[in-house]
Length: 336
Image 1 (tube, rainbow, N blue to C red):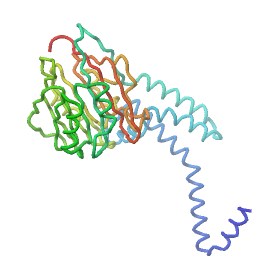
Image 2: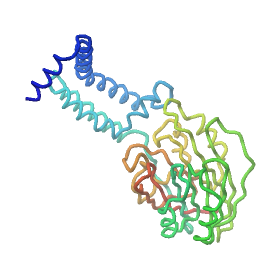
Image 3: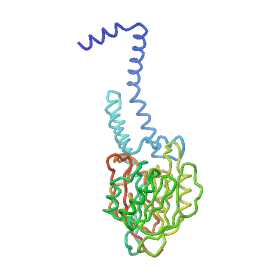
Image 4: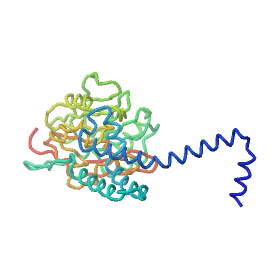
């Protein structure tokens, strides 16, 4: 009956409308036929990029960012089912899946952590992109009470007012807040000296601090960073600039929303010269931080000099947030 009514309504249309409808239906049928092949080409190109140049170039960065390993892992079974009537569809999907798994397992990963010396009293470091909220999330207060982090940094916090910061210090005694005019803010159990402002690439926000944590004599270096989401642009110039600003000294921490995955070309030298909290802690929930709890992109990072050892990591994504929070327990080794 519904088909009859649809046919009658179609016959009642003006001739020009019937012609337009036929064109739309033909276009939709054509798109449905070519879409699997287009997705196959896109998936194969993305796989080749991830296995070779990654995000080193403008043309490859787009493919690198739109197709993280978990997405491609899912894409091959979907393509195998969608193209199942075509010759060789299932063997091709199986081969693509096998290469994807091998590439993911054998790609740039965290090197082993070598602890030389006796670890000192751990320091807990927290970082969270809170998403341009006008007040601090209730979960942040709960995490501060539960974990008592020595360093608590937040990004996209430009809307947090002075009254809100004062309320945080009143509720959590012992913290000192360093607030900047951009999206970054940090609360410390100790004292901080903010280095003079320096020029960074357009869109990048970064602040360098020398800190002395409560109960510790040695100074630490802390670099806070927030990089713009520019998936069509290689990031190596920006990360190299930040690495140079942080320096090569001991007791150095680099925290931030880099909008750059851990396996990016931009972090090739970082993986060699620094430790990474979520990737190298002996107890960790994994490095992925975005989006909304899905294990797709590791774009928020806690990096540290090699004399700092990541011991344990925690993370979580509260309802209504797209970024996960992370807390890293870090042990200093040896004298700075």
